Length: 184
Ligand SMILES: [Zn+2]
Image (cartoon, rainbow, N blue to C red; front, side, top):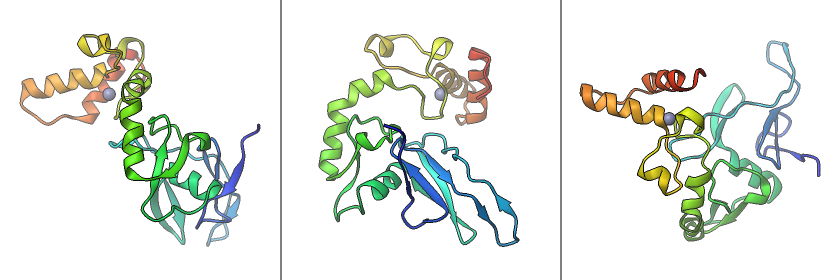
């Protein structure tokens, strides 16, 4: 099946969302008459709660929106009262339509618990968006249980503790670059 696109609810004519969890802008002309080509948009890095967000603009004002809700609203319909967007496999970054449904908060918690260890095992990024792979995969007790931890963030956490300062995302990025040779 090819990727399906539908208008983002509330942003019809400006943005579309796909059943694979991608968001694109449409061709448009702004208020000054400048033409803009539509393109697939970059999502924000995974949030501290593990969700993918994107900033959408309407009448010149930006608003952060959760991608999984955009997918559900466009393909399933509005969120029924008292329900929330749930990820079947508890991987909150997997926003394909087949992985999503509106359900109760308790069902959502059940997903998270049921999938807890699998989720950690196949997690590909730390919460600061460092790829958990190769030199950046920390060993020790956690990895023996099949969990994946970010070595760059662990190094920075140790350094911050030793130096009595706050954790620095910038320095964690530099650790990541030292370990992998890749700019975070
Ligand atoms: Zn990290």
